[in-house]
Length: 167
Image (tube, rainbow, N blue to C red; front, side, top):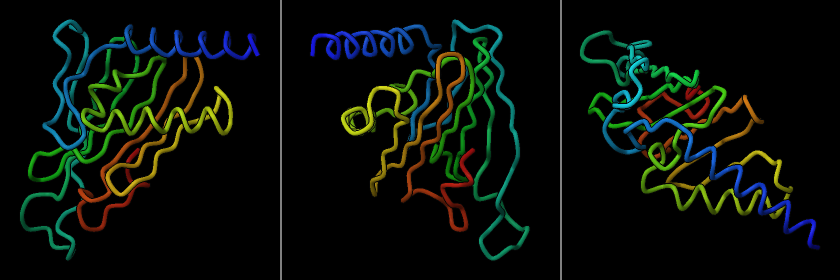
């Protein structure tokens, strides 16, 4: 029992250090697009693609969403899915360190934390995390040096876009 508690404490400390050491990207789901962190002079942001025109397939008008890529100095790459109205409805990341999930999830962070606790209770500390609710869907996984995840707001997905498009 003491060994299990020690393992839990080590896992919590490791996760906390990852969040503290991660580079802060200033955006959150349901909010405005991110900008490069002020302390990261090598971070770059670029439009990855202008995607998904109107649901009827016409090419007139603005795209239904835009994908932007933020490359952090740590090597982590974040793809941000922004609606035509300028609201972030999906985020995906991959890299050697986790992004600051508090910044990424914003007001949805408590739901993520509850998902982490449920995953650890059901499958142990090495389990990937999955949160499925009507408000947010989150998938995270990986191991030291190779993390990835996706999160999206189901109610905010533009017509014709599914969660599998968030990569």
